[in-house]
Length: 288
Image (cartoon, rainbow, N blue to C red; front, side, top):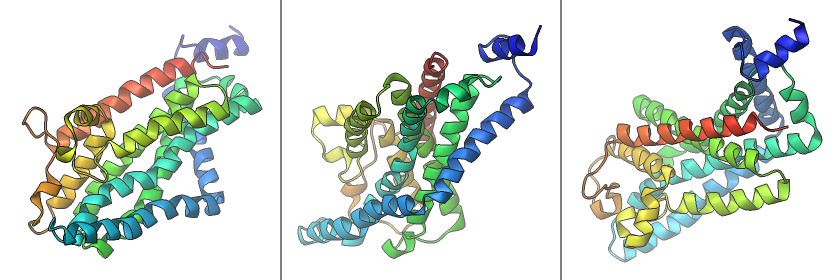
């Protein structure tokens, strides 16, 4: 068997390449995403501006309005809002992976990547892990501001939130990749992803508790994987804070009156991520 034939045999899913070779290929693609992140400092700062303004301008204003209406201290609302803002901070970097797939396809670079003698799913996994790493780094900047809204600086709390944020970032990255392998035009991709991500973010209980939503909207909320990520982070923060006065604001997600535990909620996000990655990898394998 010639080297070229062997390369095609490996790439198309026949005899698998050695694991170190697959790992090395994924690491190279991951490194490319990280280099883009390091070099685009302006883009990173602009991406972080929106969630910080959302938290410290809109959040403070809505928190004081809620306090005037007798809904509890304004600080409670900021704590309630904080997990959703972490997700917002990770979103731009996460979905940029999908945009890079579309642009790489249009420029011809994607075709050059796909002739490499490794599984195409490996290349996609490297891109998704790179995007999730960048998104987690951006979310960490917002996480560092937790003390400004009276979230205690506890190493265990921050480690848990960072792990939950990383899983959420990976879920959003894979979702962007799914859209990218289906949509071939950059303009169409941007429109479709915006239409898709905006409802997912706001239906996740970012600004309002799920219990306060009408019935038809609550059903959509329960179908949103980001709902479980936000609720799990909210429960994690609540375990390290003093008792809250506005308990209605922190009412957890319920399945017919049963409140799923944070590990179960994170399992839901993980299962969604695994299924979406499988779908994206199979479609990516037919991308040319």
